[in-house]
Image 1 (cartoon, rainbow, N blue to C red):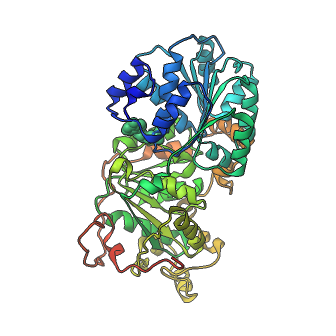
Image 2: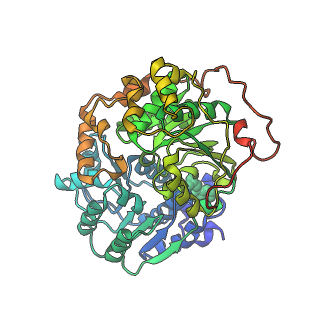
Length: 505
Ligand code: AMP
């Protein structure tokens, strides 16, 4: 099947050809004809499948006819995060270069005034996050009654972020007769309910999970003690010893952890950026840009901030924390091994993560090899030696020393200096809940709060070294074992020890 059989306009086909794509991906092949036939579409597909172009290309074809009126956008695309919204806009800029379309982005962290002026000029495509969109409608600067086509992208992530009530409100503000394109990676009951309420006779198109196609990713799990400093020490070792590491994303479960790991890696001489939900928009964009260009080869990120980012050629993914949701694992490792390239995904696994790992292995239908043995953090390690000698002695005598599981979250935190803990200075940073679980209401307000507050994250970003190497050379411990030849060449040497099967696998 070629693009020319899908019913796209000449202009759009020319733009696709200029991009260098020869064949549509399965989601494009299935969805584009339905979109052009003005049917509702329920697309079950993840990022990495080409689903953005599956709605952008037919929308461009449809939008060739007609004109936009002031404050009344013709089409509306809802995205869960600002980065995804910006990425969709880039797609319109790329494929719609030959058309004079007005594409506006309504995302938090950008001034209302500029956005308002754009709306006033008339918008063909409005790409928005739900909170900022509703802010504009409530101010009276935006009317959704002219929307002919609505795209709800990453719906299951919207659900995770507490945006479903907002989505329902928005669906009631657009005309009943609109065309709706709805994309989600999974179909939990709440999402099913929404599709039943707001889609009319949808054409269902489904493509397989990237997990089933990402055979080019070498996966491994490395056991670690539950102490945070042990995990950081192990991470540094993994980074230093990884073979062929070109660039890597290091995932943490919480934004506070992102800040701590980022700071700790910087302190140890690594060139690293950070991406989490409390950073303001320019800082997030700057971090991403530096990572894309290779100026910062490492990026510590949270799931929400990194979801769906189109970053080609990531050689390694590290799970500093095992994700609580198995789906997130699939998304994370989907950042590497894209488009047939090889990649490596290494998870740091504490005894508390066993359940999550079992759920992940069940979801992806394969067991993830475990590294055996020599992962322990030496007592003389730099972070361990920053703590008082007696305390280290106490830890060891309690049997919780190197690499062994330890109990007590308070103790885990108390022996780190405040700075190293990255202790929250803003109320928003100290919230214990994950940003993914933050209710929609407070997220809207926090946009404004983030604008008003000094930006620690932005300052950290500005101080970040631009050295395009992973980190300054540090002496390695001479504990490598003989490496086996073969296809595990991207793994650190100590991961190449005999592997034992996961329990129950
Ligand atoms: P998405 O799932 O929309 O995030 O797209 C994932 C990646 O696939 C992006 O880098 C796109 O530029 C790329 N892509 C989209 N469509 C095609 C295609 N037909 N052929 C090759 N690459 C594509």
